Structure formats: structure tokens, C-alpha cells
Image (cartoon, rainbow, N blue to C red):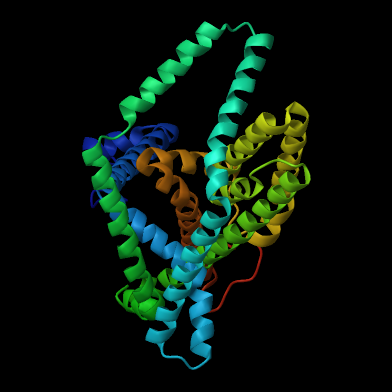
Length: 387
């Protein structure tokens, strides 16, 4: 640009922080921006974690309620199709859940009350045989094993709660169970109306994205809850049948442990399989224990490579490393209950974030192609916007 005297003035040099920032190399600026984002994300996660620890009973009750709602929602919808009012359909669904739970507990207790008492003796014998095997094959003496066992027992005794805290924990568990049942009834009855109310409070620009993300998260939670229930039942039947055929005692209690452990991916199945192998070792010797180990591995491989992809579908599957981190974090935050709810929370969060990201990418493509809202762009690279 030329002034009135025909001279070209010098271009002003930016100063201050903005000028210093612009003069930095792009790599340095990228590292600084990503580091700042990482610090903010870690701080937010830490704050959420602290809040979750302080409100652990409420957070666990909400997570369990959502899990049960996604599991039982098809039952409520079926009852509504039979012309039942929403209140009655939700109430019958909750009563059906209570009937199944109490009926299963009563049946298991009547069939295996004595066997569960014998399970402790069998495990003690298995531990003793394992101890003899270790001392006879490894350079470890009995005194060293006794010292390690005593240290482990001392750690457990120190971490065990006193009677006052135990009573408080029991009261919190009872309150959480009651709260979950009440919330389950209201979510089954008015869950869709509640969600529509939330969506209407979102700005019109983001309403479609919020609705799509919510639907994706709910479908993922429903698929996870029903898929996990089916896989747990198949694992319990498969391993229980193998234990019966091999003549291992207490097959039914071990199958029940396998069913419960299946709700904690990877870790739960490993612990349940180890208990079954240990009981087989104590009852029938190392040969039967090896056969039980082979049966457990075969069932778990069939689950991971065949049943899980078929039942869970791709929208629920997570990488094993992600599952391990999620289960470990949930256990550290909320113990066993946190291990149960950590994986579905992670799966739902991933699906919601992925849906939001895909909608944003689609919006960018529509803006670049100048397409009206509601018209999806076709495949292929995005052409540059016209000047």
C-alpha cells in the first residue's frame, strides 16, 4: 500500500504476547496447545473422580439403575404393547426382576448351602497342594512362604473395616439398593419423557447431535447389558457342564461364580477359572485340574473370538487394553462395584463421543459442499470451498 507521498510504509511488526506466539515454530505451538489441553483434561478427570468418590453410593446406584433399565426396557415395551398402562408395566417389570433375583438366591441356597461350606475346605486343600508343588519345584522354602502368607494376612487385617464402618457400609449398600429400585421404576415409566425434556432444553443448533448421541449411547448400553447377560450364562453353563463331566465337586457353586465373574471382563473370568482349577486340584488331583484348565481356556476363547463379536456387535467392543485400564480404575475408585460398572460406562462414553465427532465431520462436509441441512454428503474427499 502506497501513501500520498508515494512512499511504501514499513509493515508493522506485531508485538506483545501475540507477536511472540506467532514467531514461535509451529511444532512448539502445537506441543504447547496439546499440553495445555492435556492438563485441562487431566484436571477435569481428577475433579470428576473426586466427586465420584465422595458420592460413590449415589454414583454406583445410578450406574446400576441405568444398566438394569437398559436390560429390562424391552420387557416394559412388550407389556405396553399389550395395552398395559405405563405405571403398571414398569411396576410389573420391577416385580419380575425381584422375583427372579429372590427365586434364584433361594434356589441356589437350597441346593448348595452345604456345598458352599465345603468349598472353603476344598480351597484350603488346593492351596496346600499348590504350596507343596511350589516348595518342591522352586527355590522357595516353607519359611519364606509362611512369611509371605503372614504379610498378606496382616495387610488384609489392616485393610479390613472395623464394625462401625462395616455397619455404615451395609447401610449405604441397603440405601443404594432401595434407591436403585425406585429410580428403576421411574426410568422404566417416564424415561423417554425425561429424555425428550432434556433434548428440548438443548439449543436448536446442537439438538440433533445431542439426540443422536443419546440414542447411540442408549443402544450401546442396552446391547452391552443384554450381551453380557447372555455371555455370562453361556460361560456358566459351559464351564459347569465341563466340571460335571470331569467329576469335580461343587460344580453348581463354581458355575455361579463363573456367571458373576463374567460381568467383570477379563479379570472376573480369570479369577473364576482359577478358583475352578484350584478346587479340581484339591478334589481330584493335577490331572483333572489340567483338564479343567483346558476347558476354561476353551470356553473363554470361544467367548472372545466367537460369542462376543456375534452377540455384542462392533458398537460395544473395546480393545482389551482399554478394558483393563477401565476395570483397574473402577476398582481403585469404588472397589468391586466400580469394576462392574467401569466397562459399560467406558463403552457408552466412547460411543457418545464418536457419534458427536462424526456429526461434526458431517457438518463440516455439508458446509464445504454448501448442502442444505438434512442432506448427507456422498463419499469422497471434500473439495475446496469456492473463493
